[in-house]
Length: 300
Ligand code: NCD
Image 1 (cartoon, rainbow, N blue to C red):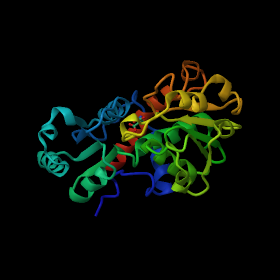
Image 2 (image 1 turned 90 degrees about the vertical axis):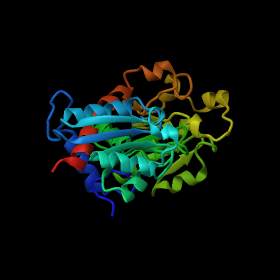
Image 3 (image 1 turned 60 degrees about the vertical axis):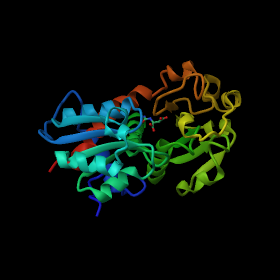
Image 4 (image 1 turned 180 degrees about the horizontal axis):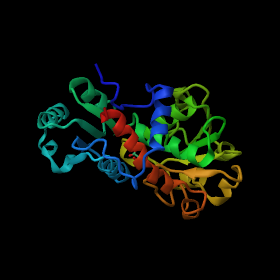
């Protein structure tokens, strides 16, 4: 039995659970530490590179008074061939109470949650889900726009290989956003519309952007393309977000990106640095949202 306080994905998380995490996050901030997890032991187990997610989980844990231990695949016995389960059993035997895990294989967090008596938080698994990112994106949209319901959100780029897109689409569609996806067929296959009810797909990026309240951009996941060639010039010509393209959105439209941004690819500097960009607010909101996720997992 998987402990329901673990956070494995958005797809199977109820609407009320999501709302309660978002509401709890609005009571937290880095500037006001609350030592409700004082003395608790949280391991950050990262099998893939990370800047934002790792540091903000660590800041969140510390703002709640917990002690964190970082295990990096390249600097641990994982390099020597230790299995995921043996690594988990080892951390459990040492007294870890929760593991925040990022892993290249979809399902790795659920596997650990099934086999270990320990709380698991998914910090991104393969092409599957990235629930804490979707929660912080929803939090940021609510903060900036006051609501999610009824907003037109254009999701543009590498949706197929993106765990962020999958989690975001599950969450935002469940809260009543109108989602229009756009990208070339190799990055947004036709089946993408079956991810959630009511999704729309257009190959014409200008149509996706027209009248949008939020334009969400995604990085092309080069490390997950498995040899598939990407035609950079074509992608840039057809899908890159420029000020001229953005002008088709609502006058108060905002731009989001989970990071890391590849400037000159999915967006231009002018868009990345414009006053419409929420990118740094997303990063900032990652801390209180992850405080809420860890408090939900570990606070009594
Ligand atoms: C993303 C990830 O790792 O899934 N980054 C993040 O956590 N903010 C997106 C990406 O790598 O493009």
